[in-house]
Length: 231
Image (tube, one colour):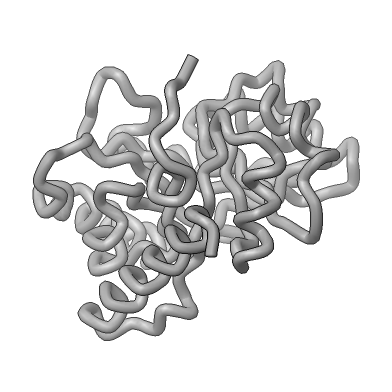
């Protein structure tokens, strides 16, 4: 067993335990392998171990690796997306996790319609209101979704957040709980064309807490591929 396969097995065990603790079905939780700075050979090894979705932070990394990644894999753009980069990935990604500006919604709509596609998107919410992070404030989210949902070619499918890094992962729980409550609030508004199907939250250091609070997309990189030095 390779280190990557052992790591994935351990993550699955932790996902199963967290789901069981929360009374949830672990099959409802998708592991998105975060592949920032990870080369295609390692990604392909993870795919052979049953990973079906990978998450990239940068458009240029998707473009560089796309043809070398083998098999039927879902590509998720999980990092900040500039409007001028949308055209490069509209036919490559299965979901965008980082919608947080109307200008970006307009550009995704434009490019999706040009390519006769509908792009699933998640709205990024900066629950903790950290200045270093992108995303909407919680109180801005409903009105933003009301407006963004009017653009054809994109489909709002849920919410995403990044919790602050905490040495004690339990301290992230209020962030995840607030996103879940916001998701339920928006779902109750019955906005046409909007689904609150997905909650993308939780990373290597806090995904178990996120699962307990309702995450069904978790973004895990270090726990799969090991620590990396980001340039």
